[in-house]
Amino acid sequence: MAQLTFVGTSDAFNAAGRLHSCYLLEGDGFGPLMIDFGATALAGLRRLGKDPSAIRGYAFTHLHGDHIGGWPFLVIDGMFHAVRRDTLAVLGPVGSEARLDALLRVAYGGLADKERPYASTVEELLPGATADFAGVRIEGFPARHMKPPEQPLCLRIELPDGTTVAFSGDTAMCDGLLAAAAGVDVLVAECSGLAPPCGDHCSWEEWCEVLPSLTAKRIFFTHLGTDVRAAVARLLAEVPAGSDVAFADDGLVVTLERYQA
Image (cartoon, rainbow, N blue to C red):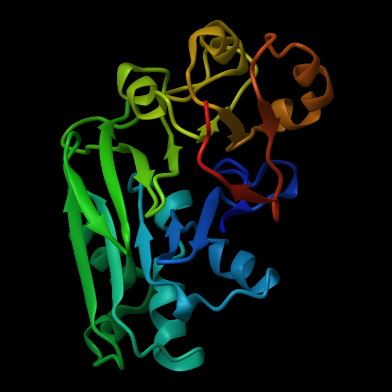
């Protein structure tokens, strides 16, 4: 049985004392697979008793610090602490390899050139492309969050048993997000504010407009800003009839099952 763990559920500002948004997928025949890895991710994994060196792949939706900021700590953890022997495999948007290398060099300088006890690979995924990664199939959709040449992604992941999970990453409401979410068993979607404007992010007001037509079977809102977190009880009462919606918190574990019509 596959499961999804919400390691962190906050925005870039650690609103309401939560960790940066990141997620762990585990199950038979694939992974474990981590989606995003902000600066607080290593602490979040350890808090949950998870070994980062046992994670088979790390996938990034985009290259902002609250989604990749934990990379230097992951690298040195595998070198000196929970020593990694297996390949540290990364899948991310265009520019991932250069950005991750630069981030490591800013954090630890010449240590970036030190020999490691494990190999590293970085595969870059274009919007519209698919990849087989850590035992799953990952499809990238264009997110609306960063200016070119950045190409942020919404991700749709198909597990070996056919279960599908979509991750919005950070994005304003857009066609790419809705396409990634279409028909999935679980959608993990950002909800950074109560109403626009909230930058290139989704708001609760915008989600209420699209929920009645959304075909995702279950929806978990994350990347919650302070105002959204404080209003969760009220927002749940506003959920349109027929929508299966929850607001995630750090440490939430969800069993993943393929929806049967």
